[in-house]
Length: 150
Image (tube, rainbow, N blue to C red; front, side):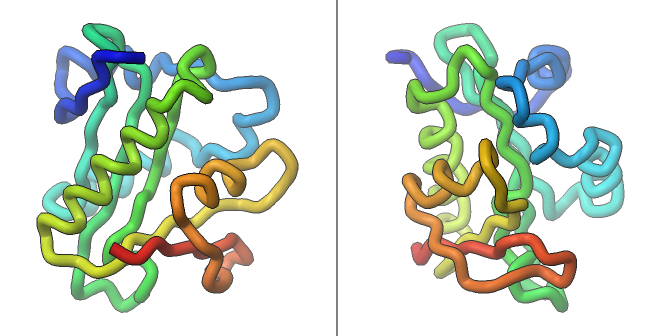
């Protein structure tokens, strides 16, 4: 992957973003699309959505949430969703997407970014650790809360 770049999610890229494939077993770690869409409708100004393209091909989708007034500390600056196409996994698209979110968080003057995920074999924990997130606790639902200092 040599031509990676980030673009805002648009009418031109949404179908490709919704069509990203997963490796077998990963679907159990992804929240339903309807849940993700509901969040955007509820807070469109606080949601940052982008696609990662390799040349002209959408290879990943990333959503972050920024709300410095959130009563839930770990949701003030959070990587909310990252989907990397099965064929692009392990080739740098995920790290590129996380770096884009980190750059946006820094631009907003934030000092940390969090992510919430379910632990388990085949889950995203190894990826999040590789890109610098460290577990700091659990959500009220028993999910792992991890953070990266900016």
